[in-house]
Structures are given as C-alpha cells and as structure tokens.
Amino acid sequence: MIKQGTSGWAKLALALLVLCSYRMGIATEPLSTSSAPIGSTEQQPAMDDIDPRDVFRPKIRIRDRFTAEISFAIRPGFYLYRDRLRVELIDHTTPAIPPAATDKKSALAVSKASAAKVNTLLALSIPNGKAVDDPTFGRVEVFESNVTILADLSRFQISLPTDKPAPAKIKVALVSQGCAIAEICYPPLSHEFLLPLQLSTAADNWINPQNETTLRFGQAQRPTQSSPSNPSGKSLAPSFDPAKSLPAK
Amino acid sequence: MPKKAALFIGFGLTVISLLVLAALLIGRLENQPEVTKTVAAGSAATASVIYSTSLPDLDGRPQSIGQWSNKLLVLNFWASWCAPCIEEIPILIRLQSKYAAKGLQIVGIAADSASNSAKFGQKLGINYPILADEIRALEFSKRTGNRLGLLPYTVVLTSRGDILMTKLGVVIESDLEALINRHLEN
Image (cartoon, rainbow over all chains, first blue to last red; front, side):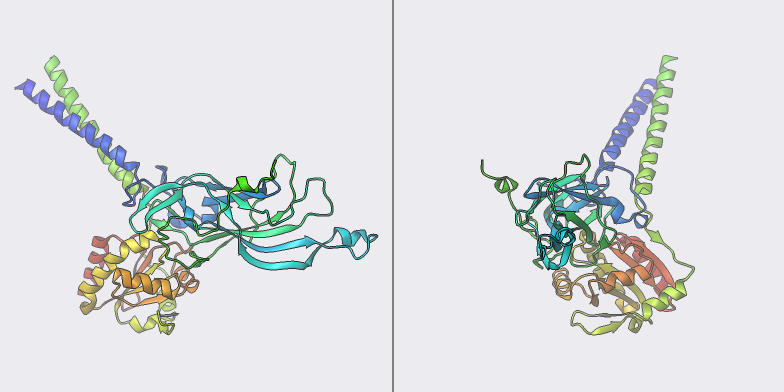
C-alpha cells in the first residue's frame, strides 16, 4: 500500500519536474508566435519607459579609403529588421578651393557654398541576419545583438590622417526599425552622423550620433514604397561588395 | 521507516515542483511589459483631445474622431510595418462585427501612408474606418498617453468620454470583449 503510494508520489513528482523543465524551456521562447525565437530571454522591460535611442545604439567610423563601418549595438530583448536598414546621404561639405594660394584662411575653411544637398542612399554590405518566421511577414531576417554594417564611400575622396586642409565631411542618416520581443514595435529611428572623410590613427575613432537623432515616424518603407513584407527578404538599401572596393594589387 | 521517508521525499518533491511551476508561471506573466493602464485622472482632458482630433481617411478627407463620440469607441493605432499590429487586427474585426449593432465603434489610426493602409485594410478585411497619417497618427497617440509612439496601441473610451483602458501591445481578445460587454450593457 505504502509502496504503491510512494511510487505514485514519485511518478507525480517526476511528471511535475518534467512539466517545470518544459515551462523553463518555453519561457526562453519569444512571446510572439514565430516558429523561430526572436530576441533573448532577458527580463522584459516596461516598454513605455524605454527610449529606442537607448535600445539601438549605432556608431560609425571610416574603415578604409573606400568604406565606413557602422557598429550597431542592440539591447538584449530587442531586434532590428535587416530589410529596413538604410543609410541616407543627407549632406556633404567640400573643402573650399582657395581664391589665392596665399589666402591660408580660405584654404582651410570648409565651405558650405559648394555643398550639395543630397538625399541618396549609400550602398551597404549587411551580414545575414537570423532568419525567423514572422507570423505576419513570413520569413524575415533580424539582428538581435550587435551587428556591423559597411557603407560604400568609394564615390568620395577620403584623405589620409596627415592630409590638409580640413577633410570634407558628410552627413548621413542611419535609418532602422525594430521591435521588442514583447510584441511591440518602435517607429523607424533615424540616427544622424557628421563624418569627416579622413582616416584616423586614433585608438578610438568612432563617431557617435548627433543630438538630432529622431524618431522618424512613418517612412518605414522608403525608398521603394514596396510592400513591407518585402518577400524577397532583401534589404531595401542598395548593396555592394566591400572586397570589390579595395584597390587592385 | 525508509518507506515513510520515500513517501515524504515524493511528497516534498511534488510540493517543490508545484511551487517552481507556479513561480515560473507568475514570472512569465510578470516578465511581460506593464502595458494595460486604467486612466482615471485626466480622462476628461484626454477625451477632449481625442474628440477634437481630425485625421484624413483613406481618400484624404479629414474625419473628426468626435463623430463617434456617441459610441463605445476603440481607437487602435497601427502601421503596416508593425507585425504585432497586423496580428491583432482580426480580433478587432471580429469584435466590430459582433458588437457594432450594440454601439461599439472601432477606428483604426494608421501611422502609415493611405495607400499602404488601404492595401492592408483590404487584405485583412478591415470592417471599420481607417484614418491614416504617417506623422500625425503617432503624434496623436502620444497625446493620448503613448509617450514614445510605440505600436500597437489601443484606447477605449465610453460615449461619456471616460477612458476605460489604454493598452500598449497586442490586445487580449477575452479582456477587450469583457470590457466591451460590461460597458455596452450599462
């Protein structure tokens, strides 16, 4: 009798332990109904207290004479859509051509007079993201942790660290859109950078976004205005192969 | 004695397992964002903001939210780029079908272009009005308490202008239906 009771308790205990393990297992999965997990298992925050600018933190630097490197830090528990990343060239300045060789002030000035107002997209090299089955958009790629993107600057002249006069600068906007695993999405976010087109030998040559980083409401689908599902799974930004930008040996 | 000990151990393990299971379940619930709020203070001011707002419909004609002030109004802020928004729309469609005759009015406020909103509205079979404006929709949602313009976001208010609920994140159908039922009966 007691033996049977003991065996019964043991079976029940075993069953509950298995159930607990199962709960632990599924607790690591996303709250969404995606078949593949999105995001990590870290504690979910109170969403309306978390500014997306604290969640998605990019920085940029000149990598070589042809490319810029963007390092995007993504807070655990959040993710960015790969196909919504783009870099817009907003503005660029060019060093003024001195009216006379003796006019050193003019030679060093950075003139905005010849700056072109532009709004074109830079070609990007974006690594593959994690493929997930989004219940709404189908198969999409996301980044859940840090990601490094390369932007093609081969159309610009990037000066050497010792070159003078002052280097030209470009202003770019990195546009991204992401969500939290708790089924809440942020509006598109635009981080703006002012990037001197000069190689740097400094140990820390990363440039942080300017203060005017903004939530860019709407405009999530520019430039193509195609379906947000973007079934091809490709980035909306033009792509490039950084290996082909390198000078021929 | 060993049998008794085994019995105690089995019982103990069961109790511990139950406690662990309960803790996990509670933890899972607690891990979800605190998204549903009942707005009491300032409801009148917020209702006034809501009723005095106009946004363009899918044909570009301005529509005042105030035209639905005699209804139990559910404002659902969404966008075509927001997967969880798209996910919850079928719930709203069902509720609109079921309770429209009793005085419920759901209105979709899209932070999106009219063309995208129309495309998704058609694809999903949305059976309630959609107002769309890429910028002003989220500005409007901020004025109703959605500080960062996150999506999806839903506000429920009575015909007397009492805000019953604001919710950030996907609505839970049973909760929303219970709320609707309760207030349509009164």
